Length: 232
Image (cartoon, rainbow, N blue to C red; front, side, top):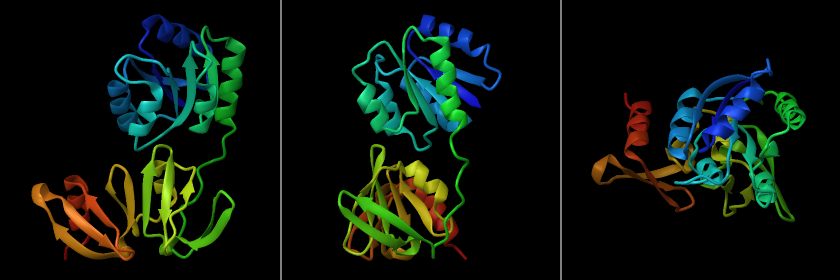
């Protein structure tokens, strides 16, 4: 598995690299000392796994995860135990306290290895089960108009409903049909069939109106891709 270390302390990075040196199942791609570096490396190299410190100058590990479009598996490495509950709320695979114990590291890596393989892309006609609190729905993928990212959760818009699900936008994008859903911006995925109105704004931005009346701004970069998809 390909991995990146994100930690502002060089000594901590060196210690972890030493431990990983004995792990044949891990290929270390790079290391970063802040979340700006980490974001660039993760989005360009697309690792399977990141070892992520929580408390860093200039922005912590949780902030990094909120910035990412592509979120790999996460093992937190920290000197503080008070973030453990929050770590598992963002679907971290493990939470290792410094100094890292070699046996605990091996157990954490085993969790990564045991993750199920990537699931197949859903068709527009496929139906998915959605549960939010005590309410449940069985919804056809093609009837979903919008996914709106809120951290590592997403609101799902269909009919007049908008339940919250515990999935990141990147996780959803991997399973949705690429010919039906497109990024409007970093935080929203829209169903092309749900668009009923398009207005050009300054700077190359598009204002999209959806069937449910919701207005979504499509960034200049995504607008260029969108126009390319819909040009004769």
